[in-house]
Amino acid sequence: MIEFLAAFALFVALHSVPAIPVIRSGIIHRVGRPIYFVGYSTVSILALIWVFSSALAMEYVPLWELRPWHAAVTFVLAPLGIFLVIAGLLSANHLSITLNPSPTLGSVTKITRHPVLWGFAVWAGGHIAANGDLRSLLLFGGFAGFALAAIPMIEKRAKRCLGSTWTDLAEHTSIWPLAACFKGEQPMIDMPMLLAVLVTASLTAWLLFAGGHSAMFGADPVAILA
Image: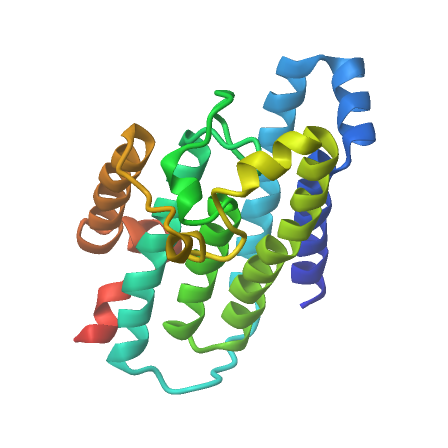
């Protein structure tokens, strides 16, 4: 438990760096942007591996008896979460996390202006039901909680950086998933969303039916349905 808490604390600390402009800009100024991104990505991946390995090393403590419907919850929520993360990273979105520098807003922001964070939370939350043990609750519950806790921080940073532009952009989206749709902001399928659908479908098929999940994590998600 202590090792897992230490690993998760490191993971949270590392992913808090981009949210603190003074620290982030200071590191980039000293080492340069390319070295920063390569180094940050490498350390983040290693920290994530440590989090998973330390969680798997914990004692298995069941919390509820698994049923087929538990797996069904994961089969719905996990792909949905993956889609939101990929679409969010590929879509232009100055209001939240993205890899696309375009000044416009991608269509996925009509679903929520924080698709990456909500997607990560949905993916993590979907894995809690199908595992039913303490370590999974701590692991995936921690991931979901961290993603959702980051939303108000990113909102504050975006408002500070964008000023009045934030108000104009945020008017067409919402923090809460699908809330903007009830105001008439209907998402259309654009290229980032189409690519996200294709990647999500391919990745899900590989994980579930080609042994990908078993090879990576030692567990077959489809087995619970048998």
